[in-house]
Length: 590
Image (cartoon, rainbow, N blue to C red; front, side):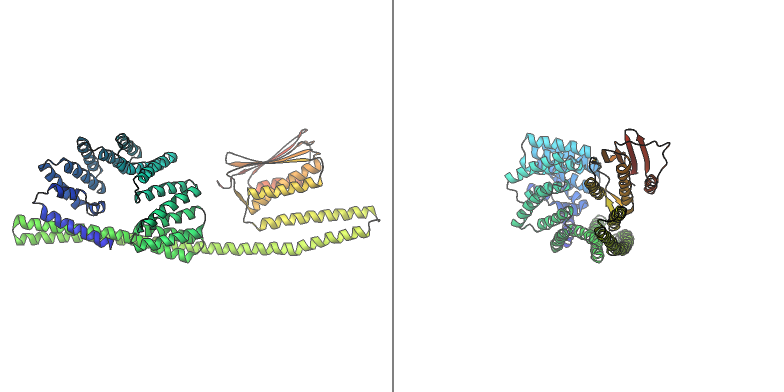
């Protein structure tokens, strides 16, 4: 419906121009044309430009200075949407000069600011300079009506520069002026800008408060398009707060509203986000359905632009044909020119249709690629699930069978010790050794099962596991102090195999210090620097001579584990103690 209205406006604009060129507009008519809605102006910028040229000429005939200034302003707008930026600049500054002569300070401020805002994607620094110029004029003459929009747009430029404190300042200034004027339509725009910036900065509580305020106002004034927009913002809010289910709920509500009121750009965005969310939830069928709808609406928007372009070509052809009939008064030449224009129009149309057919084919190829990616992702997840099930089954078997048997051995040994409590001391020592060895084996088995049940082992997992190990060591020893230090931020996780190797290496180093070093203090440290992590196990024991001491199984095992980790292993030993170093690259960087 909206597209049909736009098409009718284009045709009416063409007819208005065709039949009114010979007449001179009155000042009232000039004002009416100059105040034409923005959407109508850009729907057919070529015809609008011709009309404003006519209005400019008539304003000059009557020395109507306000009409002259406003016509230049509207012509500058047309040139901007035709991407003729040099003419946009020229006519903007002519308009500013004319409004200056009329002492229309609000318009001068607004035009400088608008010019800066239009520059933001081509030259942000120049855009900010012109925005500041408009801002200073507006504040100097206290043009509150224009300052509402200027503050909002200046906040956008500050946000683009990542100067977020300044962006908040100007959004709030705009909001204050709108609240003062009780601007129910404008207030939600400022609240949403503030809320979405707070969402970007992860200030979720304040973001929610401002989005709620904007939503309530739009409900009160029954702003259907605004309501759809705010439901979309809620979808982004819950997505950022990791509540995918709520995010899906609000994007779905926003989708229903945007479709009901033909807000196609918002509909396209809702389908795109729903596709991404369902993919994250591994609901690949629904994700694919939403992705198809997204591409359909994307094509639809392109087709709307095509129809507008076709309407412009049709009206231009009709005008050209009539003008030639009047000038030449020869029916045969008019027919000839008509055929020429038709051929050119068909050629242009063929090129446009060919372009969109090629574009559509590319979209289908991309869609097929997306479908294949979804299938591959599903297959990968199924494979990972099967591997995880196998790991869980093996770990359950180890726990239920071998773990139970080891527990039975401990129980049996304890029973034997009780039975022979007053018997042979050597037998009792042997039984104690068997019991201790079996308990250590159970601990080792638990560590193995723990590693098997994880796809990744994080720094926090290692910290917890090593802390438990050291706590158990402290319970069985007196006189040894343990210090455990972590200084890591960017290191997040290791594979289960690498994590287990790191844990075993630290465990071996601590056990060696306990058994052989006669130490009173043992330190375990994780130190991050230069995209690597260094693990240091140090003691203040008696140390040993690396050049004369024969390397035992424990040190060889640690070196082997370091090699498997692709890390650097080093030992420093002296009379003051021993330090063992393991340096690893950042797994996340790799």
